[in-house]
Image 1: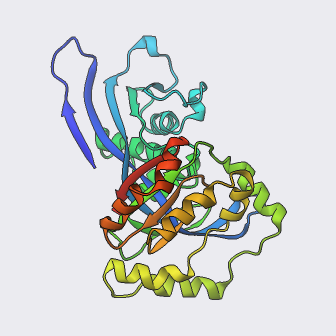
Image 2: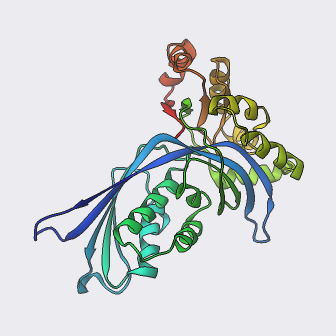
Length: 319
């Protein structure tokens, strides 16, 4: 979702701006599908966007001589968790690489980022921010870039970034660059929980390798996709398909942050149709048939205990 605004007045150097909401995601299932020769893990995952958002505003102005020859990008954010090196920030990198290839000599950009998606959660906040910047840049500079080139830049930034160019319900393969749209699972109520501690994604993958766990088989792939293609309503398809869903990174993540299991158990015992950890964690989610069950969980002693211990909690729905 985006909103474009013209900025009037000669004193303001910016020509136009675009504001977009960058949604979080959950992995409905996440299976390992081997490794590339360079060591990158190959994934087989169904990703789903959800209604928790960062907000991105990208402002464009004509470049002046004081900006220098390199792409001119400024990052402004309310977050205290962003890396000091801007090239390690996905939102900055998205704008920089877009300009590097398609407009470094003509334009300068300011990216404003308001964070609501927690970090080290497995919810894809950084990847979604990058995709939203790319989509905003494409709005600001139409006809400068093809869809294929936009996807190539997205894949160069991070594994989940190509998915966020599409959103919805999608099968993601390879290192995340192969995205196939699936029948949507929109409108399902959710409750998300995250303990104070996060999970390092590289450490989680390393622990998975050390555990010697097996990768997904071709037969398992057929089962997973077959059940997601059913004609039922989203809630019915969820119930039918989720019996075969799992996250290969959940076990190694539990070694680092064992309290993750406490959150999953609370959601499951509270009536979630499906509950699991997202990505490499440490956020967990439950999907419900009715919001009334979420309310009952929120009123429980167990939930209140987690909140006192500093857990993050948020209602959402699939989008």
